[in-house]
Length: 190
Image 1 (cartoon, rainbow, N blue to C red):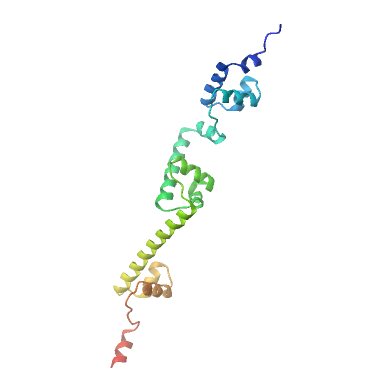
Image 2: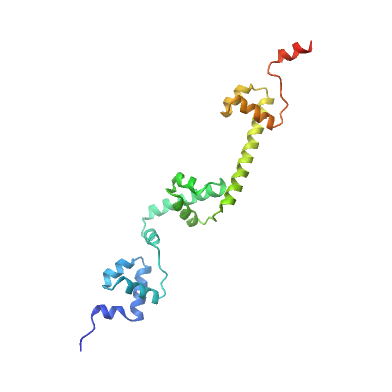
């Protein structure tokens, strides 16, 4: 009678499956378990499933093994991106440009930070509210400067707009317009 090989002994039994599970949950990858046991990839995965193991994605394994300083930096980035996403209405593409690298990575960081993702329609609505408020503040600023007798050319320079745009904003703000040349006004009345 042939004694069972080590490989055959390891492949069976609930105690083996539970020891595989313990090593996997401690951070070992399936490839490392295959190398240690000499079993096939499929057999190792089947034993892990038999033991009730919840399998990780490769990125979850990488994150488990991550350097603590790098993990802390990633957490700070995720919190910063969440603040931009929730407070300022930033899109995933804008978060990618702000340091996440890609929209997919930005999405993953937001989920890690506990953010609730918006639909496209919610983002559009939020952005229109922000634009409306910003526009309202601009109108108020232009109007108050105009009523304080600041020259229109100076207001245009202050805000980085053309003189024609400043006049358009003043009309939108329903500002009572003053004559451009006060001497013309007095000359026409006499």
